Image 1 (tube, rainbow, N blue to C red):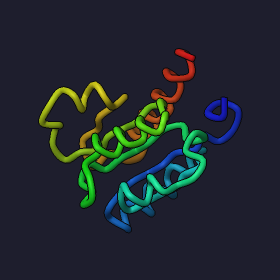
Image 2: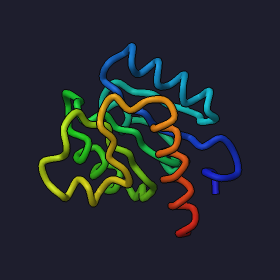
Image 3: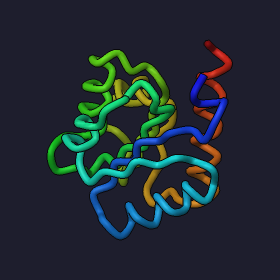
Image 4: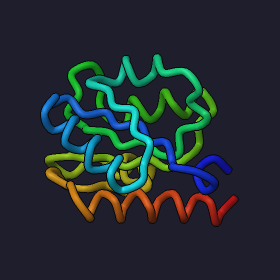
Amino acid sequence: DPCIDRRPQIILVQVDAERRRTMQLMLQGSGFDVRAFSCGRDALAKQAIQETCCLVIDDGMPDMNGSELLRRFRERGWLRPAILLTATPPPCTCAAQDFSIILRKPAGGSILVDALNGAIRAYSLRQ
């Protein structure tokens, strides 16, 4: 499993450039291989999606919301965990069922790292 045998690859979608860079550096320093994007469309264009262990999605994207981006990943056969970062709770329970973890923004540092490690570990144990 590529999520256990080496540095787990994460896709981070964060609109704000400064916050995206800060989160990317923090996650890289915590042992993750991070591919960072400013919008859902760019994240979907990434090749080798099956090597991605977890998504971290900012719900405030201009081109689509977090649930829509995750749905598009799922349509491509990607079934691993996803974490939603949101300023407000999702309006419907369907988002809570789609995402492994929903964190209220700003969720940085150890909270996000712990959430990523927990989501990846839980997924790997189910396989």
